[in-house]
Amino acid sequence: MISLTLFAPSPPAPVSCENCGACCLHMASPPFVTWSPALIAAGMMRNDGTDPNRDHPDWDRLATAPPEAKRALAEYHNQLLNGRDARGALESPCLWFDLKSKGCRYHEHRPEVCRAFAIGCDSCHEHRRYRGVASVR
Ligand code: SF4
Ligand code: SF4
Image (cartoon, rainbow, N blue to C red; front, top):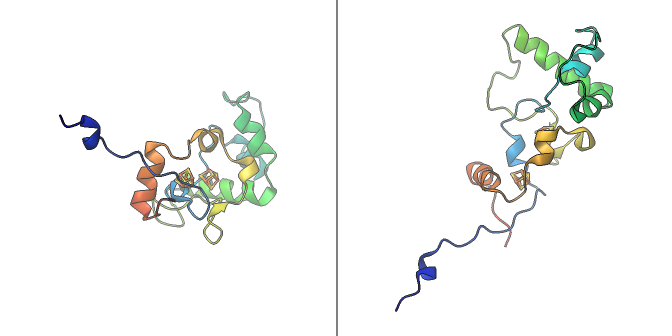
C-alpha cells in the first residue's frame, strides 16, 4: 500500500531575514497605526490629545524615533495628502528600509505590524518567492 505522505508537500525551507527584506519592499511607509507623532514633529499637526490610538505602543515607538525618521514619514504623508507620492509607486520600498543593508534603518522603532509579521509564515515565503529571495537550506 502506498503511503499518502509520499504526496504531501514538503515543509517550507527555513528562512532568515538576513539579506532579505522582501516583506519591506512594498510597504511604501512604516505601517504605524498612528501617524500623529510624525506629523506633530514636522509641525503639521497640533498635539491636542485627540488621536484615538494614543494608548497604542506604536505611538511611543514613533514619538521616540530619530527626528530624520519622523521627518521622512511626515514629508511622505504630506505628499500623499497633496495627491503625490514623490517616488511614484504604490509598491515602493518602505521609506525606513535600507536597500544596501537590506534591513530596517529604525528597527528599534518599527511598528507593531512589522513586529507581528512571523518569519517563515506563508506570507513571508510568498514575499520571498515574489522577490526571488532563495530559501536557506
Ligand atoms: S520576508 Fe520573511 S525572511 Fe524576509 S525579511 Fe520579511 S520576515 Fe524576514
Ligand atoms: S518599518 Fe522597518 S520593518 Fe517595518 S516595513 Fe518599514 S523597513 Fe520594514
